[in-house]
Amino acid sequence: MSLLITHIGELVTNAPRDAVSVASPGPFEALADAAIVLDEGLVAWAGPAARAPATDEVVDAAGRAVLPGFVDSHAHLVFAGERSAEFAARMAGRPYTAGGIASTVAATRAASDDVLRANLAGLAAELLRQGTTTFECKSGYGLTVADEARSVTLAAEVTPEVTYLGAHVVPPEFGGDRASYVDLVCGAMLAACAPAARWVDVFCEEGAFGADEARAVLLAGEAAGLQARVHANQLGPGPGVQVAVAEEAASADHCTFLSDADVDALASSGGTVATLLPGVEFATRSPYPDARRLLDAGVTVALASDCNPGSCFTSSMPLCVALAVREMRMTTAEAVWAATAGGAHALRRTDVGHLGVGARADLVMLDAPSHVYLAYRPGVPLVAGVWRSGQRVA
Image (cartoon, rainbow, N blue to C red; front, side, top):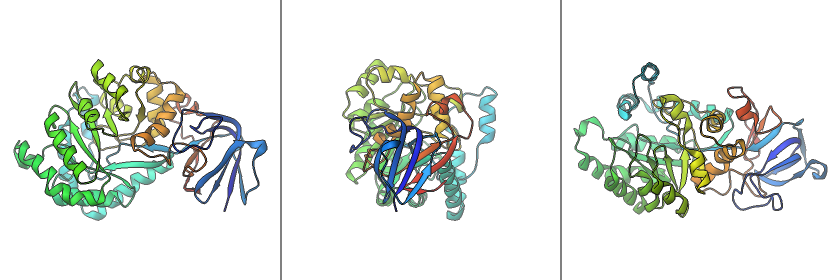
């Protein structure tokens, strides 16, 4: 059944104005006084409201803005427990380190499948209510063969974008024997997780995994049919970005502490996206990434939530957009593009992140006349409607 959404004040298509039908996200583009037709789960037409074709059903947007559903390409949603005391301590002055992951690992291992599944379903619903129609989900809080395998299996129940992150940190029971743990991550753990995953990731940071270890994990994952992504340069300067580019990873995530060589490598890469996670800096009082430097160098930038119980417990892509504009000197158009089309590039998806003809009919209606309001009215619940695959779901 076809659906026309008409009288749209601003329709953000991320498709060139002279060719609304595209095979992948294009540059930021918006149409005024527009309409869009959804049919069989896809975008069938988009253009001026005055030229809209007849359809089976009609929704009057009454001047509201419509944009592609947000694409959140970095989230850690399979876990148990909570770390609010750790957050309070940070706000009182304790610096952030990655050590708190161990407490989530202990709680996740102790939780039943039903507990993990219920928490995951709740967070997925929370994402959807805020306009996120596509999201990635990592393992990484089990760190045993059985717990990582059940993490990716549970994640696959809610999204096809499942990431195996056995290389999150070395768990305590290995007593610092990093080589043995890397062997496990590249061996039995990978074999158990690969069937349910699309991606392999590694936390390449001081205190987590070094460059050689990260390369070994990524190469093993790729040999098992997974595609690479990397946690890179979050806590300080390091080799993560260079590893990501050398291994042709889809995304280098965080990118907070970058050298000129790192920026040059991203700009000249064959498609490694710099995924920025401003919610982390908000929640840890760490320096924000220099998005302006990356954009001016020609790097493709995505925004994602990094929703997790420790360093960033928000699922709000609208908040990430507002932070990117206020704290990272992105324009409103750049931030919205990064939260939609940029996320699609980071997941190597051509069917989402834009509203060109043939795209999946995932879209968000704002209770506002333009995308600017996402940053102009931060913290206000502006999402008035969400459609996924052409069906209204929120």
